Amino acid sequence: MNEYKFDKLMHIRTAAEKKVSYPDSIQYNPYEPTPYSAMETLFQHYKLEEDDQLVDYGCGKGRLNFYIHYFFDSSVKGIEMDEHFYQEAIDNQRNYLKHTTKKEDTIEFFCCLAEEYMIEPNDNRFYFFNPFSVTIFRKVISNILRSVEKAEREVELILYYPHEDYIYFLENHTSFELKKEVILPLLYEKNPNERFLIYRLVF
Image (cartoon, rainbow, N blue to C red; front, side, top):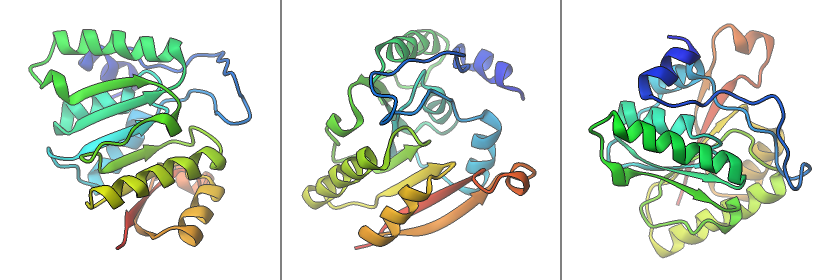
């Protein structure tokens, strides 16, 4: 199924835009949704449960959130700093919920900086598609670790197209360990960044 057909199935619009402006282009990367084909490959090898609660940092228009909510019934939250994309995610949410019997209170979007999002005790899966610099990534990971100190639980990070700085920080300065690597066939041979890395917090 191609990108358009997935969007049509869920009654959303999540295609990338040609021009994007951010207040701080050094710290924040341009919007680019995770390809549906990549998500299909990921979830052939990685399982989400209905009681999982995933936070997508830099969610844009919410593509990943709707895909997970639609196919796996997991709770999802999208964090987006750009008001334009946040509003598009809200518009998508309105259209999506009109055409589904899924639980309305298990898909949410927040317009705020990633490091300002208040992590809740049930948040246990965190997704990153290179949304920002490693400086902000470190702050977000610190927030996650502090939340685990208050409410101990199993926590995993999902990184798509993982940046070397993210990997170095996780493996040398945190208790996260690599659990699984999922490569994207055909694409990985030409670009070794075309993969997912799943890290699990080790106590």
